[in-house]
Amino acid sequence: MDDRTRNMSDRPTVNVSTMHAYDDLLRGVRTDVVAFRRVELSPPWTLRPDGAAPLTLYAPLRGESWISVEGEAPRRLGGNDVAIVRGQGPVLLTDRPGRPEDGAPADGTVLLVGGYRVWGRVARRLLAALPPLLVVPDEGDDECGPLMELLGAQVSDSPPGQQVVLDRLLDWLLVCTLRGWFDQPEAVSGGLLRALGDETVGPALRAMHAAPERPWTLAALAGEAGVSRSTLAGRFSRLVGEPPLAYLTDWRMSLAAELLTDTEATVAAVARRVGYADAFGFSTAFKRFHGVSPSGYRERAEAPAPA
Image 1 (cartoon, rainbow, N blue to C red):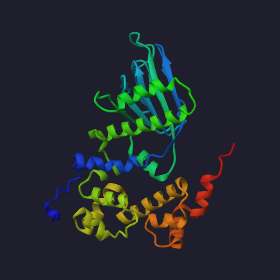
Image 2: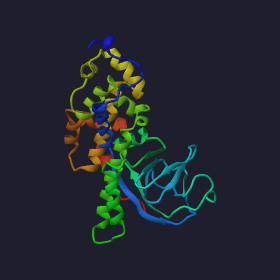
Image 3: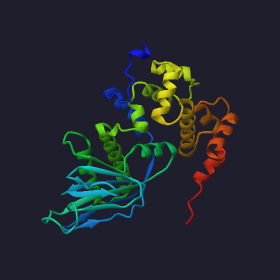
Image 4: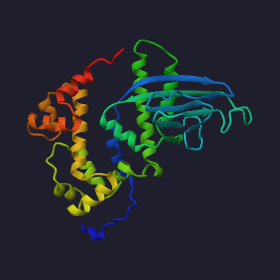
C-alpha cells in the first residue's frame, strides 16, 4: 500500500483484529500471589490497604464500594465489577463516596482482594501500559462474573492444595479483567498500547513479538507494516519512544531474562530463541544490557531471598 493512501493521523484505528494485539501484553503476565483474602465489611466501613503489592485486584462479591487512588475521583464498584490498582501509593475504599460518615447506611460488602508481586521485564511492560486505577464493570455476559462466584465459593474452603487452586483462579480473573479493559476505548490512550493498535506500527510490533529469533532489519519490519523504512522509523519512535531495532533488542533481552528464570534451557538454547546464532555473542549482548552474564542472572534469580 502506498504511504499516501494510508491514514497517517495520530488517531489509531482500533478494530477486532487489532484488539487481539493486546494478547502480546497479556502473555507477559508473570506474577506470584502474595496476598489473597475475602473481607466481610459492615457499614460504615473504610479500608486503607497497605499498598505492599505493585498490582492489586479488588472485586466486590456482594454489595458495593467506592475506590480511589491519589489524585483521582472515587470510582464505584458494584457487584462483580473489578478494579485493578497499579503501584504502591495510597488507596482508599469505603462503603460510600466522600467522608465515610456521610450518606445513608449501606448494605454489607464482601470484598475479594488479591495482591501481586510482579517480576520480569516483560510483565513490567504490562504495568507501564496500565493507568493507576482501572475499573471493569460487570457486563453480565462474560466469563469474569461466573469466575468471581467460583472464587468466592473456593476462598472459604481449605482442603489440601487449595492455595494453588486459588492462585490459578486469581490469575485467570486478572487476565480476564485486563482483557475486558483492553476492549474499552479508554485503553487505547498512549504508549505501547496505542502502538499495538496502530495500523502502521502494530504489524511491526506483532512480528517482533511473534518471532524474536528472526534476523529482523528495518526493511523487513517495514515490509510487515507495508510502508517505507523512514515512515516506520518515524512513527515507531513517536509512539513507542525508541527506534524499532532498539525496541527489538530490549524485547529480546527481556524474553531472554524470563527464559533464564522460568526454564532450564541452556544459555545456547536461550540465545537461539531470541535470535543469536552463538552463545558468546548473546552473552556479550546480555551483559551489556543487564549488567550481568546470563549465568550470573540465572544464579541471582535462583538465590533464596534474605530472611
